[in-house]
Each structure stands twice: as C-alpha cells, then as structure tokens.
Length: 259
Image 1 (cartoon, rainbow, N blue to C red):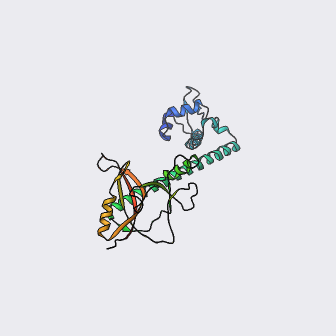
Image 2: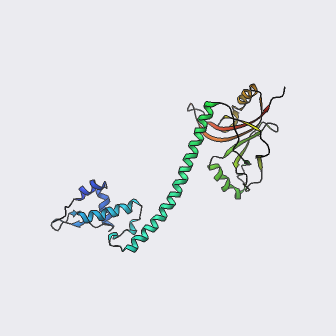
Image 3: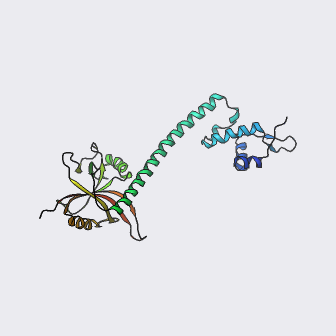
C-alpha cells in the first residue's frame, strides 16, 4: 500500500509554514523532501512529514540552521548535544523572562498603590523603607550599583522639616547596604514614630511645585504636625496630556500639635 503524498502547497497550509521557508530549508540542506521521478515535483509522504515535524520543532527552539544541515542524518549523540546546548540557551532566556515578569509585577504594584492612595486619603501605616543614601553619580564604583537600585524604582525623596524645607534626593536601600557612605536617613528600630501615608504629586523636574503644603494643612486640621517626609517614587504620568506629574507614596512622620 502506497503512502498518501502531499504537495508543498498542501504541506505549507498543514504546517502553517510559508512555502518559501520549506524551499529555503531545502536549499540549506536542512530538509530534503522526496521528488516525483517524472516531473521532479516535491512530494511529502508520511516519512517526510515526520521528518519535517522534527525540523519545525528544533527551529521553534531557535536551533541555528548551520547546526541542522542534514539533520535527519545526524547520529543520536549529535542530536543530544544540540538539545543540551539549546536547553542551556532556554534556561538563560528563562532567567531574563523571569526578571522581566518581576519588573512588570513591581511596576503594576506601584501603579496599584497610586490608585489606592488616590482614593483612600490618609492612613496610618508602618514604613517599609529601611535606609536612604544620597545619589552620587560621580563615584564610578557606586554608579552600577546605584543604577540597579534606581532601575527598580527605589528613587526616594527625603525632607527633614526641622532642618530644611528642601527635598534631598536619595535611593532607598536595605539596612546592610555598604556601597555608599552618606546616609540621609536610617530607620531606628528603637523608635516608633507615627507615619501617615498619602499620594505626593509634583510637577516633573520641579520638586518645589508639589502638593506637600496641602497635605500639611489637612493633617494640621487633624492635629498633626509633619516633621519628616519620606516619599518613594511610583510613576510619572499626565492627567490632561499637558503637564507631566511625578507621583510618590509619601510617609509623613507626624507629631501632635502642641497648643
């Protein structure tokens, strides 16, 4: 009993592969279909279809064509070696993809925090920042490490109202971070100050133009005096397609207003 045979056009539709790709694989001697003895047309029977399935599988794994010449004539050891090399490449890609997924999750979490802060107003909340160091792009040893932290959106504003009304720009880092010596603020586990969280908004590249005074006035009505501001970056966006706004989650350290 003869095998059913298919034309290159039929195989192209069946595999959802352009006929030009199949011809190119043939040109590179990756896949050699049978030929009709009378008219030299390509013919695809069950065996050649199985061989083509194998080629498609390895090409979907991005195995280079140069490794796949006369692929169906390779010995099992050579094919196994290709699989090992490909597995190593895929594992590297997975690490990159996992990092991308982590980045997506972190960005989404920051935007969700923005939405929540916008809706709920003020809330007493424990601060998760442990340490803030200044940004120093002049120290070559620190630049790469600092950029890694900045790429994770650990950009932080710090203001001690008892010392200055100006913001200092820093990076929030773990308590054991030792790559930079100038510390703006360090969380003291022995002290338990009260922090009120809210959404801090400022015109991009102009920290002076922010809504911090509005927050201070509102909290003053509730009997709170703001003595320190720690604000972690959330996003830069625009509500009206004209002005770009920087959004921060602010921890406002408060004390009771003395009468």
